[in-house]
Image: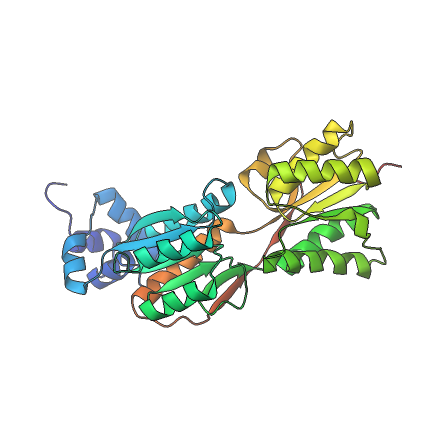
Length: 336
């Protein structure tokens, strides 16, 4: 199509009004999912490009959304980022990505820099969010949505998942298979989600009349190496028949620890993780795990932020998404 494609041309091709096209392209709510999909498909087919510079000049906005992740070296943060990027693809917003790498000072500095008029809104993935940083966000009045915060009572719009029932379901799966000596690898004490998942494990065990043996519970970093090292000790010293991990990376490290001890999975030892990272399906055997909808978390957080940027009030400050048990080949009945 010769020349610049206009909103009117997209509207005619999609069979909707120009206002509907404008609202969909701008990320405003109101259009149905089917209408939104059709408009975006037509816009992509025709090669429509919004006049971002003119819009920014008119609205006084930068056209940029900032994102600060706790860590961008693991698949957890990358899957959430992919959901954010997919949602912003149809909006007139570009994404600026940074990471704090567990450093509260760096996190505050990055937020202060971005909040100085550089971005229209901010997304935070698993942030530290010290009180001083929260106060900074309040002073700047920058639209902000937090994904998987360390504290669930953080006074900002936030997206979380049902950690408790997810972990109860994963643990119950092992109990139903006949396991009674089940080890548990939990994450750092500073993460509220860690405590909630552990409570789900404890309640599943106690409701089944099983003891939560203190020697079978260990705290780890959320890394493969920590899972391998800790599981090696638990297996060699206490020999449980199954293990639940508070994160997939811990579970994958633990599986290799079992193999290094001469055990086969799942015939000798069963494993359940939490996250459903791509590695969980690609491992051998495939890891049974509790799926967090990471991509969905990113999409819903981005959609909420776009609403805030447009001056709209959110229906709820805290959105909790469900989890799902994904059964693969890392679990079986315990050996006789």
